[in-house]
Image (tube, rainbow, N blue to C red; front, side, top):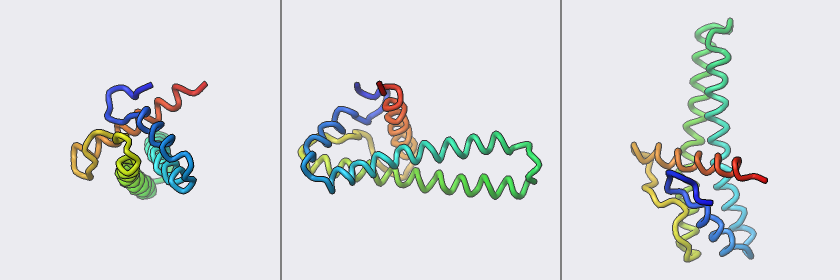
Length: 132
């Protein structure tokens, strides 16, 4: 099933995996790249949930701001890892004679940064929704 409304191709990812099925190091690299998508998703979830839970708590405004700043730095680092991972996957795809797994522009610039993030988050949602 193709992920809707994004430029991330689950089908091309499967072709990439199949093209490298005998290269355990490459498969591990592919896994680590895809795992970064879940790590990013988790960082967003943790930040948003903690902000909601602790917003009006008694931890104090300075402690709350420190917590949010730390969570935001973690989310940003994970977002940057996603950008690197998509670039790596596309390079592996090119070397494997497979179409890119992401057809959009991979860049830290806006709006591309957000578009890549939205595509990989849609892929994470697709994996979750498609499980047996």
